[in-house]
Length: 308
Image (cartoon, rainbow, N blue to C red; front, top):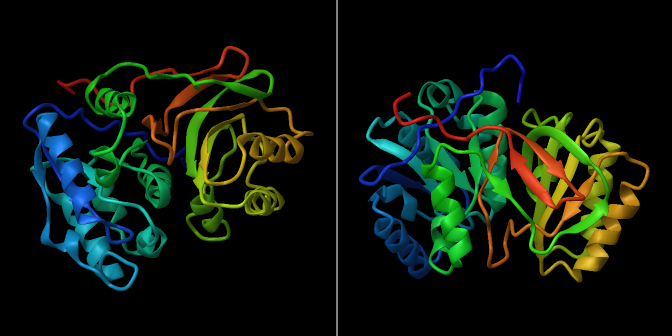
C-alpha cells in the first residue's frame, strides 16, 4: 500500500445486512452459485444479486464496461454493506483501469474473493487503502468445509486479531518477521508485473497459492518476478495450497532453491487457496509470521468497531 494513502478498515457485517454479489471475472456454475447463496442467507444476510451478474461474453461475465460498472455501483450503493465475488477464473485485470477508485475510497466496505480476484484485492488495497479479504467466493462456499466457513464468518464479523496456523506446517526457512500482509494467487500477481498496478512487496509478509500450474511454471513465474525485483525487501513468505500443481515437496523445493540466498523466513502448509480448506486472511494489515512456531498472527483487527 502507498504509505501516503490512509489505511481504511471496513465495517463488520451484522445479521440483516445486505451483501452485494459481483462477477468481475468469468461466468459461473449456476448450481454452485445458488448453493453458496443459501449458505450466506443461513448466516443471516440479505443478498442482492444484480441482473448483470449473469451476463456472459465469451469467457467473461459480461463486457469489461459492464463488469467494472457493476463493481463501481455496488461500492456506491449505501444499502450494500459488503461485496463478495461470485467466481474467479479470468478477467479482473481487464477492469482495473475502469474502476472509480475515488468512489471506492469514499465508500469502504468488506470486499472478498480469491484466485483471479487477487488482482482486485491488491489494487483496492494499494490504490484506496482499503483492507480487503482473501477468502471464499459464492461458488465455493456451498462445498466449503466447516473451518473455511467459520474463518470466513469470523473475519467479516468480529473486531478481533486474526491468528492463522498451517495444518500441518512446513518450515522451509527458519525465523520470524513482521510486515504488512499481501499476496494471493501467484499467477495473477505475476500478470500484474510491468503494469501500473504492480504491487510493491517490500516489508510485506507475502502469501502465495495457485492451482493447475505445473512445477516448471511455478518456477518460471517466481524467477520472472525475482528478476523483476518483486521480492526485494520481502519480510517473509507464507505458502497456501498449490492444488494440482504436482507434489507439495517438489513445489516446496522450488521455493527453497529460488530463495536460498534470501534471509526471510518461509512457512508452508497454510489452508489457503483452491483446496477444500480456504481460510480467510486480510490484505493490508500488519502481522508476524513465525516459521518456527508455525503461525501468522495479525497485530490488529481487520474490521472497525461496530460503533465507528
